[in-house]
Length: 111
Picture 1 (cartoon, rainbow, N blue to C red):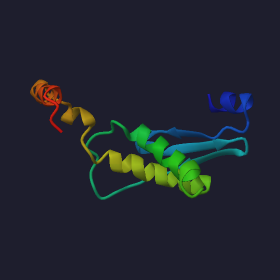
Picture 2: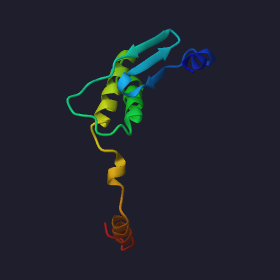
Picture 3: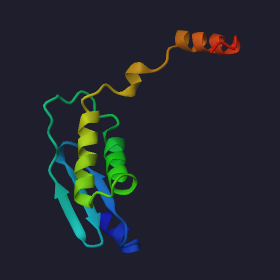
């Protein structure tokens, strides 16, 4: 799949997360494997890790100070791994009671 995407558009930058196996960075110049990042905190939940990887890479490379691709991938891996030390957002979904309280508050115009 990576080869096909790069053949279509060689200027693409592709980052593929592989969970506990690390990730791959691929460009028109070739591919590079990155070992997984370890932290002291245990993995609790992997939900959101891929999003963390993407956000870390994109923000580091294109939105912040223009880190090189290797450093951007490392930063993305750090975000992804940190995300795994947290409970998924499903553990804090709004309850019906909370929604009703907020609705009533809003309807009363209280700020």
